[in-house]
Structures are given as C-alpha cells and as structure tokens.
Image 1 (spheres, rainbow, N blue to C red):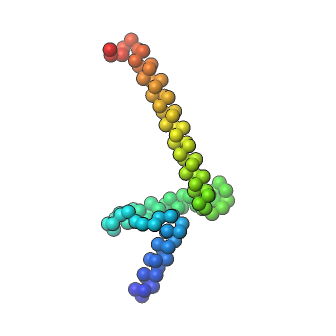
Image 2: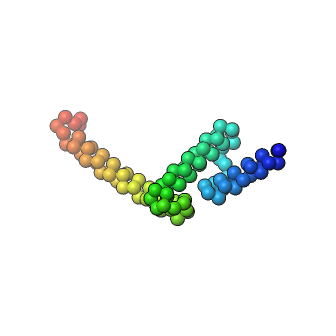
Image 3: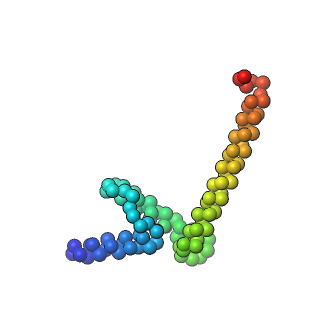
Length: 101
C-alpha cells in the first residue's frame, strides 16, 4: 500500500516536471507546497483552455513561448501608454493657474 502511494506521488511529480517545467519546489511548508501545486495546476488548465480555444491543440512549449512573448509585448505597450498618459496629466496640471509654485 505504501509503495503504491509513493508510486502515485512519483508519477504526479514526473507529470509536474514534464508538463509544467517545474524542476524544484520553492515552498517547504505544507501550505506553501499546496499553493505552489495548485497555482501550477491552475496555470496549466488555463493554458490548456487557451490552446484548445485558439488553436484546437494541446499545450505545447511552442504555444507557451508565443503566449509569453505576447504577454510581454502587451505589458510593454500598456506601460508606454500609462507613461504617456501620466505625462499628459502632469503637464496639464503644472500649466494650470491653480498649480502650486
């Protein structure tokens, strides 16, 4: 019985490493391990849904890399828009007759 349970755990972690590319656990506490495992599983499920809906295929490292690049590019664009908006707002405020000098 104990050997079977251990084998199930080993099988789970082999899947974990293969599909989620997680080679070591960060957390050491029971709660931390659960948070890391659930976070990884939720991420994988979201990736599976995305790959299925967008491309009709399973999760692949190619799609994960494409998604990572897409997220980085969109984040960069949003940061640039926010910087641009804050510059416009600051210049309007400083040009106001009510601005403190």
